[in-house]
Length: 168
Image 1: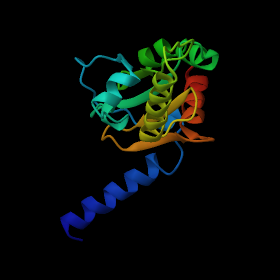
Image 2: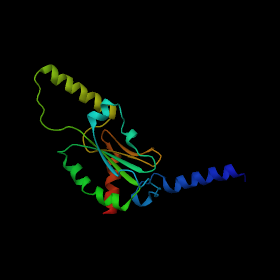
Image 3: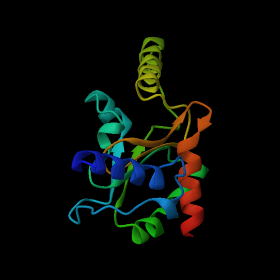
Image 4: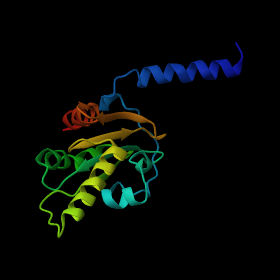
């Protein structure tokens, strides 16, 4: 058998062993991560949107990246976040990128201001494809999507929750 074919078959075998659709934390192979990287970073969605930075752009190559979109008033978000330190201690190859959405009272001087704000919120929601919080996206060490929430499909949230429950 020729060498390139053996390498390709080996890579395919490794893929199916580790990524056969089972994204449980215990089956996530560790990667060598950059020890100098910041493990947890916080962002404001408005700043990301103004620079047209996608959530995928937050994925850190060489680490598994969890992107959590949250609001300060989201109780589910707060509960998830209490488990992040333990996850980061157990998996040095994981990083968390938290993106805060504004939530709470907003006042406007004119109807026009309110309409402009609403149009911007709608545009951001369309650009990022999020519907409520928490919104979770998870990327592998190469920046490929492992799991992502899409509307009512909360596969990103469910994957993260299973990881947090497993490591607790």
